[in-house]
Amino acid sequence: MVPVQRKSRSQSKMGRAHKGAKATSSVRCPNCGSAKLPHAACSECGYVRPGLRLNMSKED
Ligand SMILES: [Zn+2]
Image (cartoon, rainbow, N blue to C red; front, side):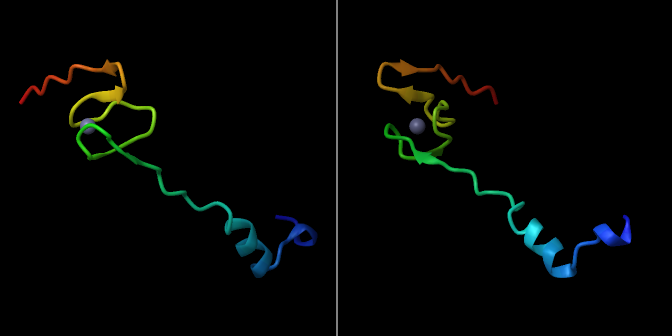
């Protein structure tokens, strides 16, 4: 890096201050109450929204 473009230690850290990973949001499944991603099917019961439910066949 060219010395004239060099940022101070403080400026580098202030730039990085906004780069942190955000916590992923989750909602409670209204059907079974477990945490699920919004707009996604529940991994426990397959519930998506009223009138739509995916068949989750557990293959163990
Ligand atoms: Zn559920």
